[in-house]
Amino acid sequence: MTNQTEITPETADNNNLEGLTELASIVAAAQDAMTDDMVSRLAGTFSEGITLLDRLTRNEGLLHLLQEIDRPENRQFLISMSNAFTEASRELPSAPPAKGGLVELVRLASQPGVQEGLKLVSLICKHLSRDLRQLHRRGL
Image (cartoon, rainbow, N blue to C red; front, side, top):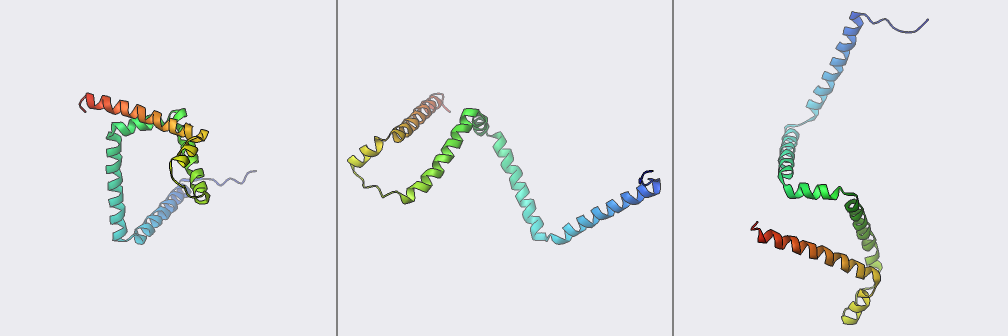
């Protein structure tokens, strides 16, 4: 013997009607809760969002950047860079102020991590410069 309730066309209609009634109540409550100003702001935000999305999807450079960022080595590079920003922002306040001068600069530059960082920046600058020169030669 089971406890199943027999579903007849009448009970199915009643269940559907109750569901529709509850849905209508929710929609009515949402309409009552929203003021004209809220609706205007929501419509404006939605419109600006669609415009921004349209502009972003038409930007070939941004689309190329997003494709490059999706490469595993670039994802890891971004993770490393964000970790470096976090660590540097924590270390800087407790570090003694820079004394300045050529001797301090040489001492700072003699640290292996600093040398690797400078090498990274120089490689990025080298490739960026090369690409920008090619771009201008083509007349773009």
